[in-house]
Amino acid sequence: MSDLKARFDQAAKDIQSLAERPDNDTLLRLYALYKQGSEGDVSGPKPGFFDFVGTAKYEAWAKLSGTSQDDAMQKYVDLVKNLTA
Image (cartoon, rainbow, N blue to C red; front, side):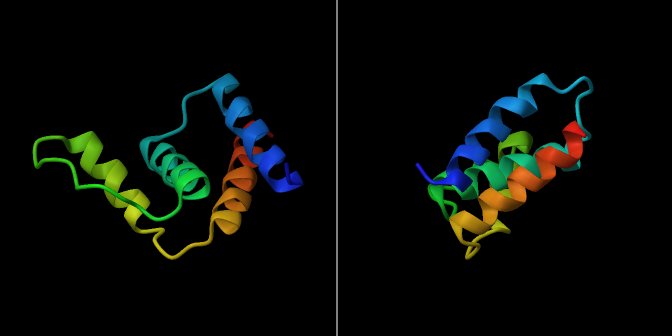
């Protein structure tokens, strides 16, 4: 396992122990970076019109299309580090 992948996995664990819940924009950014880092570009159909949360998540992830998985992992690790510092 690469060092980046190990740090990414650790950041995913660290984010679970935050003292305070981040704001919604930060949560969407975390979600999108995690999905891009772990799965790559967005896939599957966009959620229905009345699934507001699902649509927001899908659109946040779609904005990262074309970002390499390694780049997304590094940005995720950096964001978690800022939140836990």
